[in-house]
Image (cartoon, rainbow, N blue to C red; front, side, top):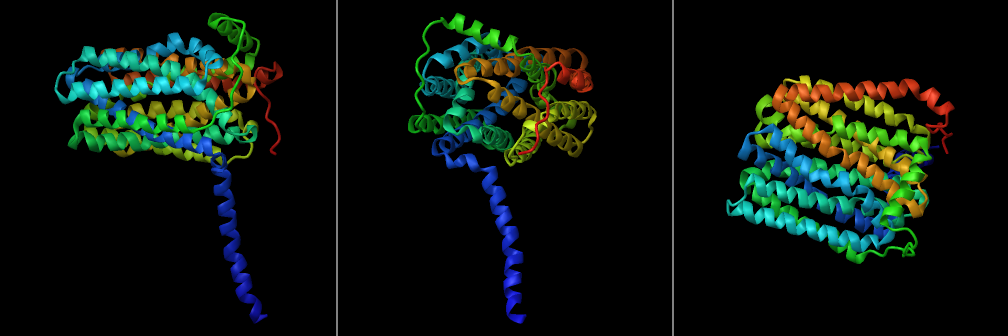
Length: 433
């Protein structure tokens, strides 16, 4: 018996380690695909730079103008092209080489960030130039995003698509945690211009990845014009009522919930009085929650049966936004932002996954362009209304108003779920696999 004790001890310690390794392998299984891993890494580094610039630019606008409305206007202009070009961008992404299209748009955004950095370095930048650069960068982003969304399924097997989307969400939100934190620290030592230079350099990571990866070739679509292709995509979605209901989730969040990001410089400086570094840490809180949520989703083998989770996450996000509006201390604000980051990813990542899996490959770019329209195209209206309400009635009121309207809508959808399922408008839960 004594000779067997070491073996039993070995089994007791080895089995949990094996389970942990299998869980890690499950979370990161899409990295088995080399091209997806390179694409993921390039996007992560590029997004870190983008979040650094977003925070530094918001702080710079506030320092130059001291106006919450101009903060909202700048965010409006950066997102407004998505309102106009998301649908054409989806049609273009289905008709052109997606990788080449992304190389062009990423290069354009890199050069715009470099111009902004140079103007800021020499103290030549004005609010007019900031607004123009934001508009041009928004145009490049509007053309880039449908191709970006549609490219992911080309890099992994279909069985790994849910995991790949969750990991993509994780890298975006890890950059949301790291980028603002680095920007908050860099603003004190390098200034806003330093953040803009770093962002410009970060685009090289994704451009190099796009040049290296191999993307399966798709036949160039013939027949309808870009306008005709857009109409085909709209017709497909119009015939799928559950897709319309799904698209309403990011639309409401983008219009009334997500503009909290635009108001965070005012919230940090005037309400919590924590300065630029405190702003960076607050935004990192949302990023931390988002990363935890994204990695949790990535570990799931089957998410189809958890689609109810979309509305639950959206409702909790809305409630946390209302509580954030009332927070009087840094600690409580940080806590609510962690909750908001986690539930935001839960709602948006699962919506993204549901739309990807419901889209035929030849229409995927157009369907995802409608997701981008709901999430990013509606954003300029949300940013503008948030800035205007904050200017007139205060930042706390603007946050609370958006959260309250979102909460009412998502709770109403939750109450209507049984009826939506009977009508075939909302997917029924499927058994775990």
